[in-house]
Image (cartoon, rainbow, N blue to C red; front, side, top):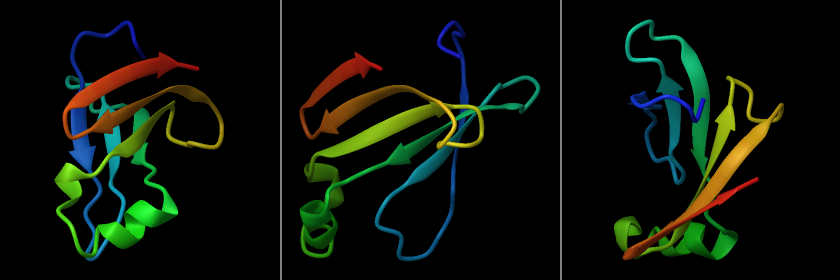
Length: 88
């Protein structure tokens, strides 16, 4: 999955969700290549009710394939003003 140059990202839609989930698709065939799931901690879930979630740190885990339990390929941590990438 990481050898590709372009991806199509589709957000899962839901009302009152506290964490986002995205499908990672091939832009030409629309075949699902992976899934990205936001994994904020318990305290951050609570803070999201009171603060703008764009200003809070979060962790996004990217999984290859359609089942996140099968194979974790990489994860990275995003915050309001930094990005770090660590491959697992």
